[in-house]
Length: 494
Image (cartoon, rainbow, N blue to C red):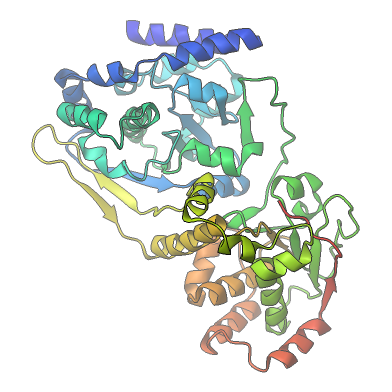
């Protein structure tokens, strides 16, 4: 309890104060001087044994999530509880709004093994909103951010993270001997202990984010809160965002999203597919956004022949991601084809490293931590996770190698039937996957997706016919009978 009291005092002292710029600089200097090596060397055999006793000899099931799924779940589910296990320095620089910090330089193994809920709630958490979230943790989805950088490379080291000799070997390994890598390893240790503590409370919906916080900072800076500088004003955050289907490329939402200028700017939307008969193209004449529209005038009825619009819909989305057409639509941009010809391998590698890799295989992991003997870790294969990983990897590769920065937003009235059908059709044809796999992929990212029976039948027919557009010229003529293409003279690129 003395240990928890000291933790409480130090955590409260860092949260109560309103720092000046000079105080923040001094605080950062203290954090930078934190000796991560000493934290690793302090892990003696007694500590390791107590951790293994707490984890037990049974398999610990670890459900993985990604930054994209956390973003989408926040839009569909609403409030979620997020635990941030990074160091104080990293947390103070930036963190997700309303996340609860249990930093590695304050919370050791004893903190999670004892897991005194009343003490945490009454003495450590002072923010009313965070206290309410923690109190309702059994009714919320819980996400854990366990590192600053991606830990896909160290997740399979997890069975040995509670082995004293193995930790010392990692410290000497050139791959892991950077300060940030060692911090992430210690954070991952604490993440396993936290998962076990929550499982002991019979909380099932606990997810460990395999992406580091840097991915959130890169993809969703508008959801992050900055504390280390007055240069970061409080962001204007929309109440709700559309669901991200393809990373940084395609979003699916409703009529309220398409009317929100802040969302268009945050997500950098350049093309909007409006699949409705009543919703206007709000920013058709906007001089600041320069969005290109395609409007499909159809109703959400079983007998509507939405398949007639498939060729034009596919061409509109595909053209948005076409490198060559991107150049011709933006005369201010240099020719990306010529740039790639004369680009050296080193320059290409540098450009690709600027974008953080977020594609990850999210199969559930089962790990054992026996006190003696061999520790094991196993994946539980899931077909949908493998298909999603293949699609995400293809999109990630395109994002790294392409200078095209267009983003497509697809919507109808509720983002459930008409617009979802168009997105499913594009996923099917673009990635050559079945109707069942495509609809499952989209539903995992937007759970309210529910095309009507007539649209589902037309998607099945589209698959049976080989996902080909027969008699393309006639198909385009049929499509244009129910579509209005709003042409723009200019298009914006980021």
